[in-house]
Image (cartoon, rainbow, N blue to C red; front, side):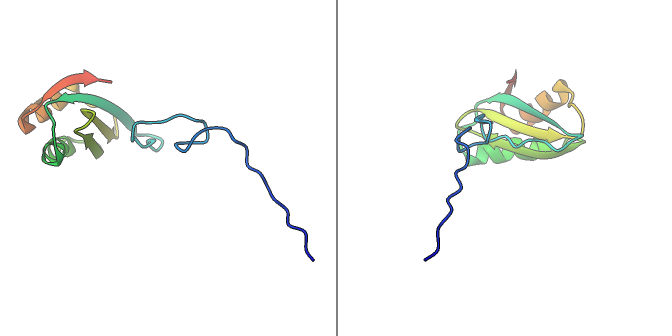
Length: 102
């Protein structure tokens, strides 16, 4: 008969991360990249998310965009901080309103 060894892991954190912090769906940016979360007014569906993502993705330095209509939040990962007026113009072009950063 063999003895089983049970290793218990520490119970810190939550399902989101070992530290217990949740990031509203935003991924951690690799070193040298900037993650900015914007609030955009008027998005109601997947089409809205796609329109905003497409316009923001066209900005120089943008690596990824995640728009969530349900929360009105848009997470942008870029190589450097983006000019807010350029972001505002891109969101306006998509047909929505940039409220600001979160």
